[in-house]
Amino acid sequence: MWREWWVAGALLLAPAVLWAQRPILGDNLYDVAIVGQRVWAVGYHGTILCSPDGGRHWSLQRSGTARALFAVCFLDERRGWAVGKDGTIVHTVDGRRWFPQRSGTEAHLFDVQFLDRDHGWACGTGGTILRTEDGGRSWKRASLGEDLDLYGIWFRDRNRGVVVGEYGAILHSEDGGRTWRKAASPVEIDPLSGASQCLFRVRLLDERGFAVGMDGALLVTEDGGRTWRRLPTPLKRHLFDLCPLGHGLLAVGLRGAALRWAGNGSCLELGLSLIHISEPTRPRLSSY
Image (cartoon, rainbow, N blue to C red):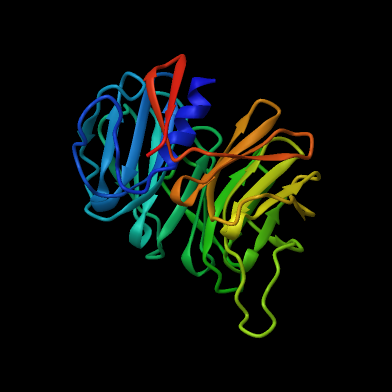
């Protein structure tokens, strides 16, 4: 329970705010990864912060880059990856020291996911989707044929995955990311301006999955990402990320937006703008 609330609390923040101690930097943090009590957060100027005790104490780790890092993932307490600006990818095998990997692209990378030590994916600007089968020693790029900025990617196994991005784009793959097919998106496009709601993150739990985006957009699939429908929500603020919560999910976003979907078709807006953790088993909520 505490882990899910901690993730939500961290993602509610754009400027860095660190719990149980004074902030050690003032730049933005963009993503967080948690394994047991160990926590990593990444952000501007290649910042990587690590906490060994669930967020009570933090230290800076040397990333080896000054470029912004937008996403981070860890398999265990030792092995992780972070991606960011200009195709930056850094990797650690001990949870402390980070080394660069060659992405083969200068596109900004906004999300990364690894299923195991070998199989991983990343996505970013210009329709960039990267995949690796050797832990990031080499990356291959899929060709979409479209100039779309892609913000979120998720694979439920080595074959089936979904990527989301601007203009409400949703694409799914059945072959490990080698080829992609466009799914019909329930996100509307303005016929006059061509403007549409971006989708920022996607998660597949099994056949059911969710995507979140601008103006409170919350989408659900029941068939592994092939078809999607929109769920009604009381929120109009952008939702940037989501995590499983019991049989439902928790989505968080702009200016403290927090939305809980209970799994029974109903959505509840949570009046939270900051979630503090004082003890790992006792979340303490406060307004900010």
